[in-house]
Image (tube, rainbow, N blue to C red; front, top):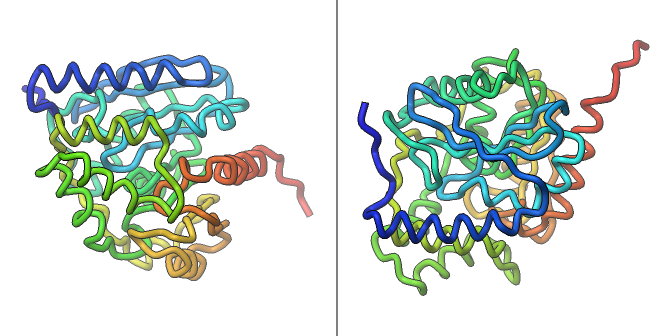
Length: 297
């Protein structure tokens, strides 16, 4: 099956590669680059942390790349083998042969990535669309998910508004610096700026790339969410702009028994890069709690 390129031209691909390679040159820990075959295309994965440590898989948000996790990787990879797959069809180095179109495709892609990495079960999740994909996997195949780390998940608990489309799609059709800067400022809380690597990659990708993602992060049925028993950490910026901050937390608490839901102060949709010290600390505490043996009463 033919591969669909996310790049508009060979020169655009080279420009993106230059920025991507420079961003990985600033990666703060040892790094391994992998490609995992799936029916949707080869998936590009960055990996850091001890190879024999418990696995943690985090998927970036739409229009992000695995490089967006640079502010988090040092803290998260101390005691975990962290795998950072890039969704096929999204910006990055995954090769798309067949775009993901629905929830079943999303779960199949995630499962096949884990199979390719020889990971039977793991803590999974991500930011925005990445969080939705992790939650979707936990609802469809809970035996593969030891825990969930959801950061500002798009859809899932609430309907996805039009704000993301209204701010990001103009960047694709009018990839000029003022338009891109306007969208990046919107993703962050007032006074914050997006992480350097995210901003540079987003800028060059909007100019030279074209998304091949077809899956829409819709809201999941209440009856499914009420059945979720996977330990879950939900982090939402207090200035969240896509899916509502406090309203999202309240709905998640109502639907998911025992969910650990936290509002991250001073952050909006790019919370993992805006306030990495707070996000990292919350995730590490959650992972440590998961690792503790259960003591019988």
